[in-house]
Amino acid sequence: MTGRLDGQVALVTGAARGQGRAHCVRLASKGADIIAVDIAGPLPADVPYESATPADLAETQRLVAETGATIITAQTDVRDLDALKRVVDDGVARLGKLTIAVANAGICIPVIWDQTTPELFDDVIGTNVRGVWNTVMASAHHIIDAGGGSIILISSYAGKKVQPFMVPYTTSKHAVTGMTRAFAAELGQYNVRVNSVHPGGVATPMGGGDMVAALERTGASNPKLNAMGTTFTDLPYTEPEVVANVVAFLASDESTFMTAEHISVDGGAQYF
Ligand SMILES: NC(=O)c1ccc[n+]([C@@H]2O[C@H](COP(=O)([O-])OP(=O)(O)OC[C@H]3O[C@@H](n4cnc5c(N)ncnc54)[C@H](O)[C@@H]3O)[C@@H](O)[C@H]2O)c1
Image (cartoon, rainbow, N blue to C red; front, side, top):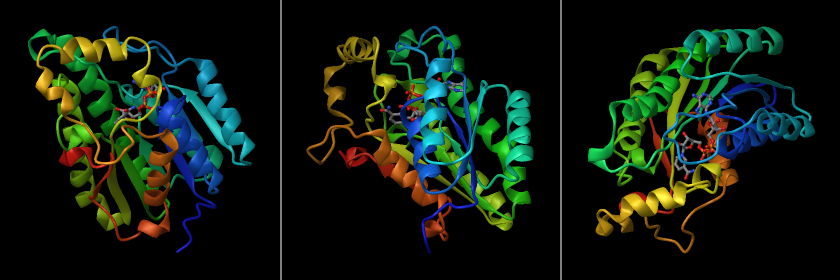
């Protein structure tokens, strides 16, 4: 057991910034080549924080290249299965195979339950559930062709407990938890492991822009729920690299007998 990823090739979605960028750099620093996908453009209108840009994706490319790994980037929407398949097929043709997929792209919209529009609900489910399903559907056959590998679905603390004032987000992240088990069951026969990761608060651009104001606004509607998500430790949130360490572990042969598991990186918040 080495934990090294030499000779591996990893697809990472939501790779332009935040946790996705950290996953790319961490996997590359352990020896994997990277196919980095991000919409790198406008997110749905109800999203309260800034969208990522092509410059963000280019910065991920630069940081991965610094490790000596090869990286292919694509400005692609994970909601578009055909486009995602083209990107992954092309990446596999150029890099030789695919052995790791990290379905990380996601959006988060605070909203009080009776102010949630059907459009907002569809936006969150479209990216966080359909986008994750698309990512597995575009990658699993390649991982099977390579003889097996590791698929890591990024859920959330909200995929185990509740993120208050986020019915669509909590629904989407619980769906990812179930999808993890369902894919793990069927892909196990091909030596493909499927696990989910459940971060608590992570310092990324998702928390920027008007996100804090949106959380305060929604939180004021039922203040006793605001204590949910409190951590047991002194740290209220963590850095993307801490989550990336767990992703790298799940990608490596150090976790070779783990599948259908749901790993929290949340300072204990799911139990508070
Ligand atoms: N930040 C947190 O506190 C936190 C906590 C738990 C879980 N998460 C989850 O972690 C994952 C990464 O989030 P982050 O904190 O790095 O946020 P982020 O907003 O910084 O990064 C998300 C990236 O996903 C991309 N993206 C969004 N929709 C896309 C689409 N349709 N197609 C392709 N790319 C798309 C964005 O452009 C962005 O670069 C998400 O799934 C999020 O729900 C975040």
